[in-house]
Length: 97
Image (tube, rainbow, N blue to C red; front, side):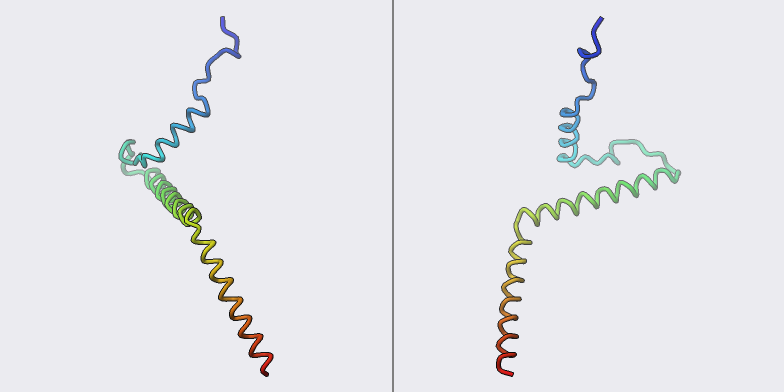
């Protein structure tokens, strides 16, 4: 008889996370793989949730792309430079008045 400590874990977290990452990276369309129940409101609710989930993933990927390209930082630097120039112009106008 085996002790409870020696029982293998049927779903090790590390393996499960790796498998989920592979599925996500492969962009598997579960709607095409899994059968759907036609004519129920449950299907439409599930479809709506899946669509919202896909939209979230797309937006998250876009945000990560923007972050990785450092476009946000560059645009922020440009805004700071323009603001500084405008402040100098305002100071020049105020000193002439």
